[in-house]
Each structure stands twice: as C-alpha cells, then as structure tokens.
Amino acid sequence: MKFKTKTMHFQLENKHMYQFFYIRKSKSNSKIGIIYKAVYDNRTPISRDSLKISIPIKYWDDKKQEVKVHSEVEYEKINYLINQHKSEFLAANKKAVRTNRDCFIEFAKEHLEKEYSNVGTKIKYTTVLNSLKKYVQDVLGKDSLTFEELRKIDFIGGYKKWVLKRQYNNRDESISKRTKTIFNYVVVIQTFVKKYNQLNPEKDEIKTIHYTSGIENFDNVEPKMLYPDEIDRLINYNTISVRKTDKTIAAKYQFLFQFFASGLRVSDILLLNFKHFVKGRIEFIVKKNGKKISIPFSYKASKMLGHFYPNEFEVAKLANLLGDIELKGYEVEELININSHMKPLEDLTIDDLVQFQQFLIDDRTEDNSKRLKVLKDIIIRVEILIAKTMSDILGDKPSGLVFDYLDYNDFNDLRIMDKKDLSNEQNYKLHRARTTYNGRLNRIAKRIGVDKITSHVSRHSFAYYMLSTGASVEEISFALGHASIEITQSYIKQFPSRYSDEAISRFGANFNV
Image (cartoon, rainbow, N blue to C red; front, side, top):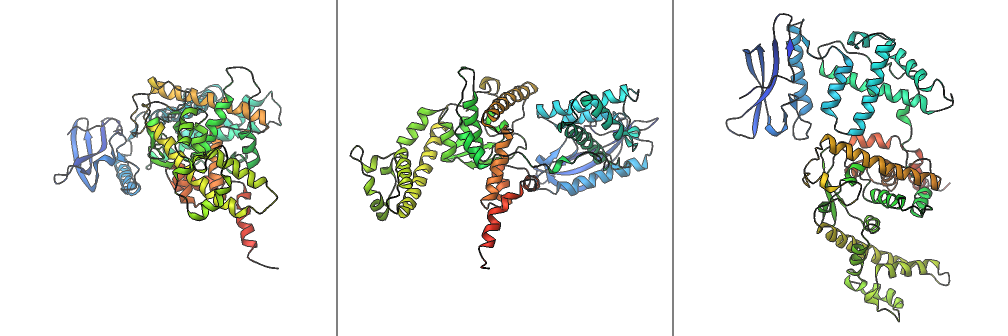
C-alpha cells in the first residue's frame, strides 16, 4: 500500500518527522477499512498503529485524512479522535510546526482553493483576502500576516477602520451599506480563523469573539422575500421594452418556476436537464451539497415552463381532457350545466374548467359554493395529470439543458445523477450565467417597484410560504434540499414575525371573551 504524506506532515528543526493517517482494507470484507496512523522520520517508518476503528472505505477522505460527513458513520466522533492523536504527536514534538502555515493569508487562500468550488464565493473571498493583504503591506509595512500578529487584540480593529476609510471616505455617510460591507469582510476572515483553530487543536485558540463588535449585526437582518402583493405584481409583469434583447419576461417565468418548484437553487435550474424529469417528479443531485433530491413537478411549475415549451404544454393539456378522468355521480350532476353547444362535457380542457370556475365566482345570482368545491377538486386532479404528462414529454427529450443560459456542449460531460464537480471554466460560465439572470431580475424589480429580486429570493419566498401554511421544519428542509435541518432553522429564525399571524389567529378563535 502506498502512503500519501503530502497533506498532513510535520517538520522538526533537524529532522523531517511526520505523522499521517490512512485506511487499510479489512481481510474479511473488502468494503470495510480500518483506520491506521503512521509516524515516519524522513522515509524511515517509526511506527504504524491501528486506531481500531472500522468504517466503510467509501467514507474515508484520503486527501484530508479524515472521515467524510455522512449520517451512516460517526464522523464527528472519529475525526475528533484523529485530531486528538495529532495533538498528542505535536505535544511530544513541541518544536514541530506545520509547513506552509506561517502566513494566515496563504493558509486562507490554500483552504479556499481546496474546499470551495463555487466561483462566486471564491471571487468574493479572494477580494477580502486581497484587501487584508493590502492592509498588512500598506499599513503594517509587512510582507505577510503571521498568526502572532493576528492574535493581537487590536489587529482587527485597525483593519475595520482602514476598510471604512478606504471604501467610504468620500461617500455619503448615510449609506447603510458601508457597515454591512465591513461586517461581511470580517465574517469571512473569522471563518478562516475558525478553520485554522479547528485544524490546529494543539495550539492556543485565536479568539474571534470581538471581531464583529462595534459593527451592526447583520445576522439578524430579515432575508429578502416577496410578499403576496409583490408576487402578484411579478406575475402580471409585462415588458415595456421594444428591444429584442430584453429577456426579462423569460427571467420572470424562470423565477416563478423556481418558486413553484420548491425554491430550487439557481445553479440547479441553470444545469437542469430534460433527463431530470422522471415520472412526474424532478430528480437530481444538488450541486452545492451533493444530496439527491426528488420533488413533485407541480402544475404551476409546468405552466411556467409552458412559456418556453408552449407546444409541449399544449399537448399535455389536450392529452388530459375532462373525459379522461373518472367522475363520481354527484360531480357529473354539478357539472352537467357546463355542457356547451360548442363542446361536449368530456372534451372540456383545463382552460375551459378554469374559465367556468371564474364564472361561478363572479356569479352573484345564486349560491355556487357547492359547485365551486366540486369543480376545484376536479381541476386539481386534471392539473396533476397534465403535470405528469408534461414531465413525461420533457423527460423523453434528448439530454440537454432546459434553460438557455449555458451551452450544453460545455457541460455534456456531466452525468445526469452524479454530483456536479465542475471544472474552473465550467464554474466560471455558471457564475456568468447566474449574474446575467440576476441582472434581468433586478431590472424587473425596478420596473414593478420591488426593492430587490434575485434568484435566491424565490428560495426564501418558497420557504416562508411553506412555513406559513403549516409545514414542519423537517418538511421544508427536505423540500429545499438542505444538507442539515440546522440550515433550515437558520432560515426560519430570520423570517418576518408576521409568518405566525395566521397561527395566532387560529389560537384566538378558540376562545370567546
């Protein structure tokens, strides 16, 4: 067996001694491995010991020399034990230091390159690190930022003042964005410091509790979402531009598709393939966390796609007429009056049924409540069949991207149900496509009088309305495809307090005072 020693090795002043961890296949089961630790002096083995911990080999990360995050293994406990062994090794060799770890900025850039795949995140974080580097060079007059310098209590305070002065010295002091920018910069630095602390348990922790002090806490800012009247404005939006290049109408339908398709992430809809439509559902691997997700393909979502695929949607509607569903006797009785001289009852389409529903709603001459209830149930059944047919039609298409922001030829190496590990070039093109999409949404927001619309607003909005209709946190988490329920809870705690208004009203209705 070859041992990889590049990832985690330690140097002594006069020696090259290092410790690393690896997994060895079990003799009784080739799918199970036992975790070992080894200590080498240059290329001479000093010791090899079993940790007596067995795990499925597929959950071992050979590069990071730790257990992958997975519910089937106690990864936190095992990785904690591995870190304990690392600490003991370093304690026994007090002069040992990690290589390539003298400069915090270099450490952060290395970690950013290895652990982050999202191009947008990389660009934002690199901007922060470059800002930090400029501060160290121009203000502190140093070539690198040592960890000892980072430990100084006044270091981050000086950096915050420098950022504020550098970025907003000549701007209106009333601009609220200035403190948020500083807050975001400091949080990024704090993230890398916490990662350093985690990877170096044997060293004194670098305290970061004071990093955001004196800055408005933006963690509690309510996430942007659309309220019902804003969604109505978006639905009724029609472009006022005569330019052929104005793609805001397409962006509107893409946003509404996201909203009605469980708030799909923008990266997932941009990479959405026809082959992800399976038996009335949308099934794919979430790009961000590699989690498999399966959500129902609703009629409203299929209707939004009808803007891009009108012929397919029309075929789906004509394939599911009223005569194609089984009606009960009382339903036929309520619908018999719909019978038109132009069209038999069994030939009525979903559009005919919706038109008749609106007629009954507007009719004030008699009580139509019973008939409306029957009609609503029938419409729901027809819609489900149409969505299923639309899913089959799209799924039968050759493999290709549903939306046209990206060229499929640049992404045809991606397997349909595999985790999307994109190349740097693919990530860049995805980032550009996201920027283009959000730019179109921003133009819509200005035209309909909404503060802000981005692709992620659809996700916040979906979660908000799911919660307000009584869905549990677990249901919302599953629908959103979150990696953990804690992420969903962080969404919920930031929602406007009015989401509980309906529940409070139901509570009050139980009492007569």
